[in-house]
Length: 233
Image (cartoon, rainbow, N blue to C red; front, side):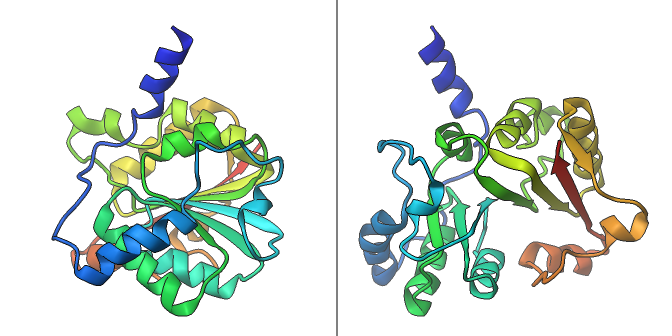
């Protein structure tokens, strides 16, 4: 019964489509050759130290859930070479795009997972992630779909488990209802402290922020973004 419940809970967060346009030949080849080298293998034993997942020496571990085209993930990996990044993205076309950049630039501090992020979160050991980024996640704007939003009490508990003491959870969105939803859920969870002290703290992009395509689209459509930072208590 417990195993059945675990499987049900582990896949509750992914509702999006898996694939868009057909991949080009080179993209297919990368998915067959590069992806297996970078993918975190959940069938393997959980490492005592997550840093051992990387072939280069890293002193921090950062997890990005739903990296889209990978622009933010790649930027952070370039500018923080001693941080190990784990990027999660089930959408095949986005993963193929990231793999092309990783291969071209020889980025050694990126690992990936191409399925439901909750599966990875359940596999990860406790207290080893320095930061979790959830940036412009699908807001599921219709109220009847709000239950599909990635921010939930179950997933916040997963975050709380894998984050280090005083680890950081960063959430960015241009959808007011999702921003308020996240604030309320983090408050109700009790294990996260919102770090804002004034309006500029959540209206100002994060340090070193490169911008994203979703942020640019929001600005074109007249929407501002919120950048929330929560500290694990």
